[in-house]
Length: 426
Image (cartoon, rainbow, N blue to C red; front, side):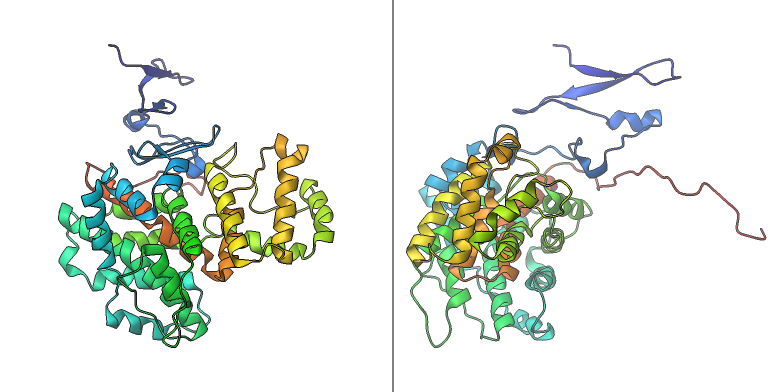
């Protein structure tokens, strides 16, 4: 069978350049432009919106159709029938675990949740008002100082242990960031709790009181983690891969991913939703802000509606909407003024022709921000929770890259500065 090629004709050049066309298992074909460099050319693609930076078997997104698959499984099915740790296993290993494999994996994670006591002392060096993401970047990167036994990235077993340690310790570190901010003592993880239940325990329990964690809230937290577990080659995942291409250890790579996620254009959307609801302030002002959102000359934007990737309903939002209803009912806060504003905005977005025509549906950030606030988690912690959930995606992509032949990342540039010039007096 003849391989498909694309032919590139250049003005003033006699012969055209043939470029291979590659096909994946699903999705559009891609043109391999790697051979252009030998011809003296390379491509220009700001933001890499038209460039596949790697080959991957982990996650597939079709934004036009609202499809998100992890190892082939639709996110809606995973959210309904699976749980976060099983999805972690799937992302890491490529297949769902059998009961014995799942029990072994959960046990592995359970007994890696504690952090070294010396790591606790790191927190004393951070100001009480330090942003939790600033602490996360430093502390996660510092994990490599404690685990020299598993830093040979060429060994599959070392990569496996490091992956399990990261998934297990991230919620512990996240809860420690919160406790540091409010001046409460750190709470140790408990081996008799599930993953999400343990996180809520470490967030809200104290040595004086350990309130029972509601199963509904634990399930909601688990689902939030699951829905954020991976999202293909986004900015933070690409950062992890780029850092990993240098041979950096996985803790440093994930720390780099956390730093990228910290940017408000990436990981701060659910926090922006809460800020928007606070700005609106009262149901009586909703129409005013809807009018402003429709005015292209007004800088105000409705946060939590539409998505850069999804041009249809975000499949994760459908799941989160149901969870949101359950959480608000469980906590008895359906009539909270802020949540009433959110519900009115949601209704308008789903019925108003302006939003329908532009496919500005509520996205996962709209609902997750509401849920996290209802649970009692402050907005400054929202991106931290995003980082906890995204950890298996980061480490899976890192492991996939290291497990196969790869090159150090080295993007090119279109130089538009001064041409060569001599120093004055030369």
